[in-house]
Length: 322
Length: 143
Image: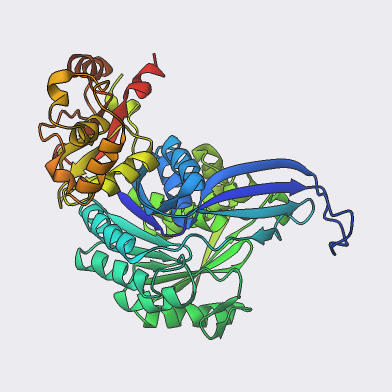
């Protein structure tokens, strides 16, 4: 069973727009923007990973905090997609994350993200007890997404330590200080979320060389592997021994949106590893899953046939050892 | 059809020490009519149902009268809830757990629900650990 932790789940709301008015300054008449299409889905990085795993028939449990009416909708969606749900309920309301996807600019959406409900200390204690129970069944743990208010910044570090104590490999799929602190617990794979900053800690990620240097630093701090997106269709995987560059030979015009693609990448890697593929083949499958999701109208492409079809377009190149 | 084909993979559960007030809140949030109670290993050791809670709130003589029409008002129940709200679930849960496994048939589940008057049954793995629940509606919606 693969356990995913999404401490700050969300209801993802996508709106597709033909255009965005050039002048968005407040006016007396207000501004009405009509969507040509919309989509609502349970979300948060770990939940997205679980959804793709479940679509491949892999046993997965999603954990985190749910609250209010939005939490009910998230729970229902998660269960309907075949994911086992073990959430802690708290007061308040889960966040709704809005993405505006404008025709012709699909890979540069406009995001509006809420903060999420505050987690009280008693709920954190209950979560930890449930987490420890679930660890007994887990083969991998995925710690994913931003921390909600009330959760200490070293919480992922604590969760990673508990998993390490049980010899369960951890995939760290988050960013910022919470990710940097958890590196000390030697996660198996780190997929830093650098969407907003294009930096990893104090290191810029503009060029291939900078990405490799940042990956090496993450590995030096304790991770076995670090996978960093280099550009929209390329990822660089760094281990202690080697560096690989994965490239999907896909025109950007094929992409309908990018939201969820990095979660599909992580999930695809775990699908590969769970099916006994080696690391490189697993990352290739993850890349194929990410590309298929970016090309899909739905948030995630759950069609294994379409993912398989993308595999042929993923190339991998190995660089010299560090 | 096997239970694995239609179970609800919801692992919302109580611990023995969960208070009655917390259990009521969790029942409300989950939308379930009962919640499994699990131990440290995730094994189901009891079930707390709405019926168990109502029984806990009613005065003892109600067991004999079988009607709520003898209650002067619901104030009595509210007072009783304030009294037992901080008490542990363990005290009021049903300890004789009726559970099914993913390999059990839909017919077996239906039979259990009818014979034992259950709205919902926990699903456990070979080690007795909770892996989901089956509600009456899960069966009905697939007929």
